[in-house]
Image (tube, rainbow, N blue to C red):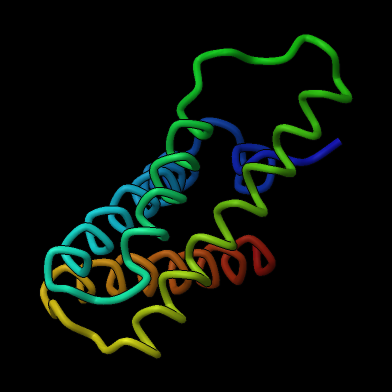
Length: 128
């Protein structure tokens, strides 16, 4: 069984709730960055934007699977999709340039916040 963020950080903890919001907001921020890049004329941004919108539709799909195997497969697809979307955005920014700067900077700050907070919470939980 795949552990959820609540079981890792403690169910109902404020940190788990805050991190889950950042995790869910990151694909939306990436989609906004890709929309701005597409508007700016960057090649490949439209294809990534369509993939981001498909992933966001998958992520916020209200249907949940009753069968545990299908639910686990859904969770694995969601996790790999999130990692792929962040990787695709990072490689797009690295290859095509960081413009428009403002929206890509927001995504970079959110991703940095997620990484730093997760490491800090992991250290705090290990020392507790």
